[in-house]
Image 1 (cartoon, one colour):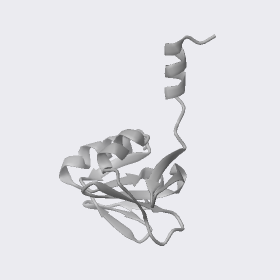
Image 2 (cartoon, one colour):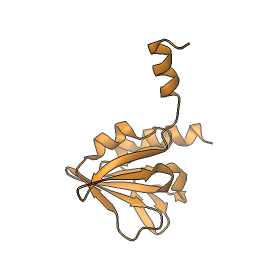
Image 3 (cartoon, helix red, strand yellow):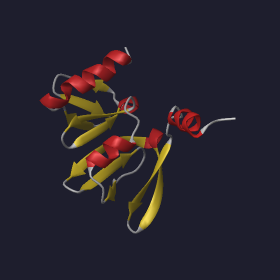
Image 4 (cartoon, one colour):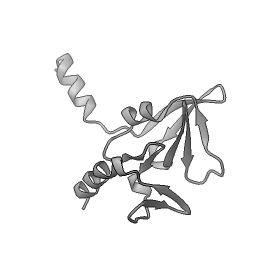
Amino acid sequence: MFTANQHFFAMSDIKKTYLFIKSDYKLIKINLSEVLYLSGLKDYTQIYLKGKASPLTTLQNLKEFETKLPKDDFVRVHRSYIVAMEQVDYISRNEITIGTNHIPIGNSFRAGLDEVIQKNS
């Protein structure tokens, strides 16, 4: 039988596979495997998904998503972008390419990106 602490730690080892977000007055379930990247616009975030022509827009900032998303799978690469590492096609010196999208890499975020790359190399 688990104590409360053991249960908490066991649950924290389980990887999140989805999130619910509010968009257009609805709660929408997003499978994290479908997320390409997130783009921040002040207090709003646009979430770009596989196979969707237009992004979902939600009244949450990138900082909130940064705390909710699995850290090894989603990396903040710029003050305005979080990318899904699984979706990255290639990384050049100053940008990440996901499909036809080119996402800039901010100098202050380079170390965090390099750390995740090292873990997965």
